[in-house]
Length: 88
Image (cartoon, rainbow, N blue to C red; front, side, top):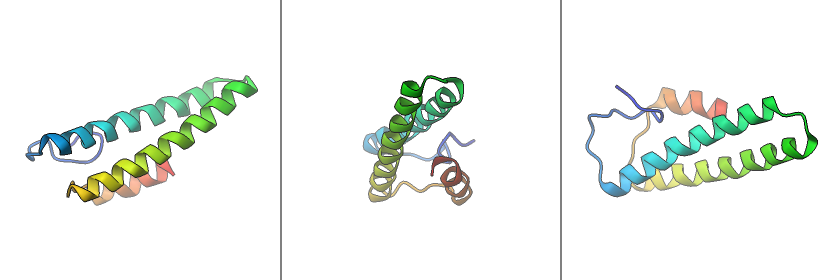
């Protein structure tokens, strides 16, 4: 069984790796929420907030991916392809 970021739950991870994994999952959820907000609002200021929030979350996601690579956290290739289309 895989979690949101394409990892097998049966794998053993260090606390530091688990923290990065949790942060990646939270960031993905936040991105999904911001995109929903963007679709649901019509006020120009709220649209602007959604745009800037999405940009900040994308930068956070990229940073976390960099950290994950440094900690040898392996992501499923299919997940990376599908998510990269959604995230970027």
